[in-house]
Length: 175
Length: 175
Image (cartoon, rainbow over all chains, first blue to last red):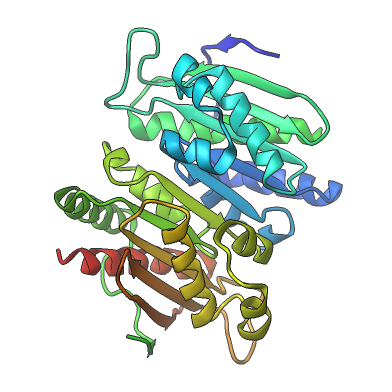
């Protein structure tokens, strides 16, 4: 599924809401015996932080990739330079390549990639501040991408990005 | 310098204190034209999160490594399996190998590695919950390691770890 979805992640993106998502995701991953991983550009480690807030998270989280720059996306996840040049870092093609890269360089059964414009700088008419591309991937399965345009400041954009990333992971577990 | 330092990071480890450290570090890095990177085990991405909270952080932060499991420490940073087996994941030798690995797989001028027992599980008589090893490294320079034994719960141990990691980076910039 690919599309532009202007909605936010819905209710509960405060710290307690993120923590609740991480706990539900962890329980579902543990039930499946799955590892999860993440490639984080604009969230910069926040997904890893909320996952590892949960005691016992080492049962289902083992590594994550903070790929803030383009070189990091290339070096660590194998995102093609041609994709970054042609489509840009904030694009469906880059998000999809990031999540495929995570599945290649980890044993994760499930992965998410997040790349967006958190602001306050970096926005363009085509990709204004708040534009965030997500990709979710399952080992041996397909990749789903979605774009959100979040309202709010840098903190709000990043916080909603973490929530949407986790919501998609939870959905992918079938929980 | 290597030693056991039982003290915490001092005052100001709330969110505002972490944000203040990240801003001071960013300003010092920008003045030097340096990139910084981090290898995070027990902090799980929190250092990356607070660094990328800062607008414009892409000028001095480009990639980070969430190496929660031993396989991640080996695969992503080249920490020798023999070190992990002989010294354990929470040790001076592992922290030092982690930070050397970061300097190898990034262009960072300055790096930090953090590996510890955040709890509530995983403590041993030798390495109780709250034991955290840090290593700071400069490109072309030496590596400094230090062990802290933090009081408090998982959140408190992780939060103090982020603060100490940032304090050491700030000190290494000469700021």
